[in-house]
Length: 318
Image (cartoon, rainbow, N blue to C red; front, side, top):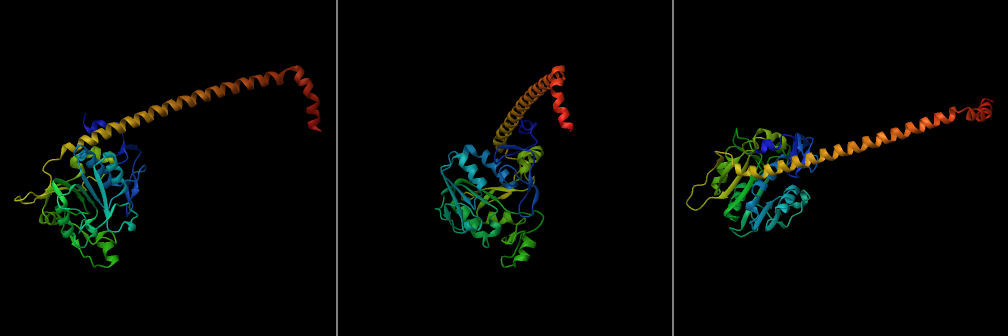
């Protein structure tokens, strides 16, 4: 069974909380439509990250160290379920967003030895960092041979990167989308990654999931994620769109879809059973009401009862 077949009877479901939902709500800085899960609050990027992490589950089961830069609570919950060896959350200023972190540190000076990290998550961080090239070099430095970094940034494939760290706040909002962004990445982003010694494909949700599952999970079809590794010595780093979708990532979503369908079917069965119970109780109450009404009519219509009640009726008319 394909993942698309598995969600035939599910209109929407959230890979982050593994729950079927009736649709997605507006969310994000500019209140995007269909962005936020009504159950757990995850946004589109969190839901696709959940798919990627689930697809990497067998690999992560053997991961000694996973580093999460500027973590979200959705990431934490997902990695807790995958039970990685050592999960380290890092942020330079966690108080700014109320994050729970394990280490205070900058992505430009990561507090880890070289070749120490099996998986590094860097989601929507680099657009905040004035010296993003230093951050990219740090990511390459700490990755062990065979380790991977999942990186996502605001990205426009149609033009070059627009950046100005010293721009006034109003201008940064207009140009980069947020007051705390210093750039909006374009096609040269991949050149910067390669210059830092990173290699790997750029993947899009629609390439991995297909259009039906993109709609079912409410992710952005063309919002890319870079799956990067440190280029081996002597190999020229290359970064770009994957020539073919990494189908192994579908395995985890397939299981999620089946689980979601199972959950939805169980909910429907439970709702049908409850409806039957309500109907049965309604019929019992109606029958009891009809019996009491018939008994009341028989009693009040009896000649002796009517004769005995006559003085009371006469007094009520006085």
